[in-house]
Amino acid sequence: MVIAVASGKGGTGKTTIAVNLALTLERDMPVQLLDCDVEEPNAHLFLHPLLDVSEKVTLPVPVVDHSKCNGCGRCSEVCAFNAIIAIGTHVMVFPELCHGCGGCSRFCPMSAISEEPREIGVVESGHAGQIEFVQGRVNVGNPLAPPVVRAVKSKIDARQVKVVIIDAPPGTSCPVVASLKDSDFCVLVTEPTPFGLNDLVLAIDVAKELDIPFGVVINRSGLGNKDLLTYCRREKVPVLLEIPFDRRYAACYARGGRLVEEFPELKEAFRRLWQRIRALATTGQTEFRGPS
Amino acid sequence: MKLAVTAQGIDLDSAIDPRFGRCQYFVIIDPDTEEFEAIANQSLTTSGGAGIQSAQFLADRKVDAVITGNVGPNAARALQGAGIEVYTMTSGTVREAVKAYKEGKLSTVSGATVGPHFGMGSGAK
Image (cartoon, rainbow over all chains, first blue to last red):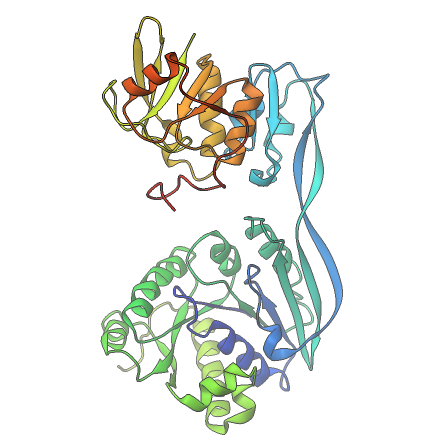
């Protein structure tokens, strides 16, 4: 089962939920944790994995053989990202805009375009205790996170592992969609503030669009106002877990601690979270239909 | 000779648009006859590479020089590749820009005057 942990708003506690859920399950079943927040992966700060494999992620970018090019401009027509242009009979490539689709080389009538790999990031894997750990990192200055996210997800080991937990990036843009795609369940972490609610609604739209059953974890419960709970009740969005706004939890997080190992009440809470996820994921329902 | 001015409107009294790739309009003018046409910038809403696309647009129209506020690194490279001269002027109208150009009061730039994504959003970051 693949569980993606996402949120609209940043800083709501995605990594906290992903890491502590993995720690809750690791003794009972083989677990894989994928940090897909490749622009700033941080799950390693809590798990201290031993990373023994590092693989480069590359994109194929076009190289033009100007002796073969007749300047017809077909390459420029097929490129959706303005990464290759024909000015007069002169073709120019802008590698940092290239998404690596291969269209230009495929449609070049003169076969003047070949491809060379451009490194855009890295995938690192290893172990943290019983947890199989994978994380991606995009190179600084590279705006293309989705291919790195996909490279991280290519490490999903469905045969060996029972539960895969994906720590997704914040927001609702391409890297989030790449992280959530093909998951069996989506945990949306939010907080009871106006920003938390606003961005949760956007994230729910993404989950619905991708047809992934979802539930909400309310972090820092007690903070802000009641609008979030009212919304969840009205829209029949299942609330899987509420973590109270507690200074001790914040202090634990701030020093890179593990909530489920320091607070027995949270260990219990994460067990219940897992049971609820499993129940909702297996029935595939996107709305809570139990007694309200 | 064809001169392009990035503009916020469609006539000679429109203000210069300081953004290149994401300007509202290109006013393309013959500085001698002052015959001109204004064309809405199709790159305004593109997700990326607006400067490159705009440079290609001007090259396709056989423009020789452009007056704009700022150009980013990719636009500068594309304009240079197209052999289009870049003159900078950040305020005033299209008419004033053309006059300043004819009087030789504008200076050319060969590289980028701002970083990437300068013209996104409100145009001032």
